[in-house]
Length: 173
Image (cartoon, rainbow, N blue to C red; front, side, top):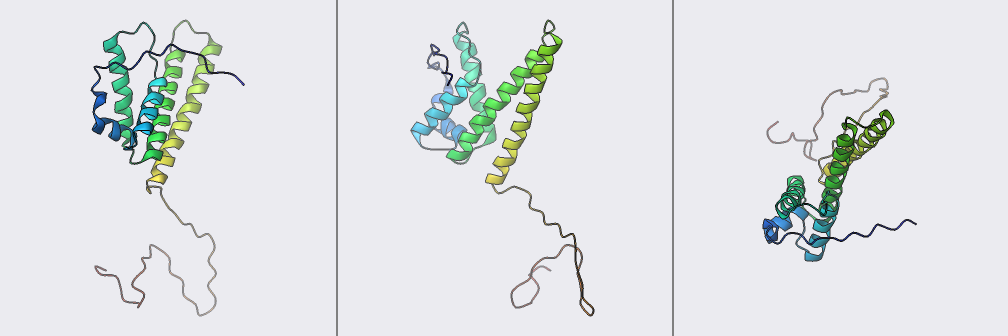
């Protein structure tokens, strides 16, 4: 099994406005401090922060990643984890697209980068679907393909809303 390469992580800049508990809770969707820290660390690991990056540029990139989390508006720990994955997937896809646009890249390198970007963008779309389903926004649809109506029977076609159990129509109908 391949080991993750060791990196000399620089601590997050202390001048970040990230220190607000409200911002962290909004970005991660949880009040749990250990989960908050883990998700923030994971999203920071998923962005490119070269060693020679200045303090100001590091702060901008970290705040940008946290803003991405906030824009997803996670409402619980599960959504916070999914939002972190979504930010990582987005950043990886954008890196692949960036690499595909390097003028000096070979045709094979460009194709490979575009294939990876396509897969990552597909994953991102599925992550949005999962998030919407978790939030109860998934579209529900029932399709009836065959209906048999016996002699003397009746069938209704179209949008039908259920009324009260006593057979009375719903209020406002």
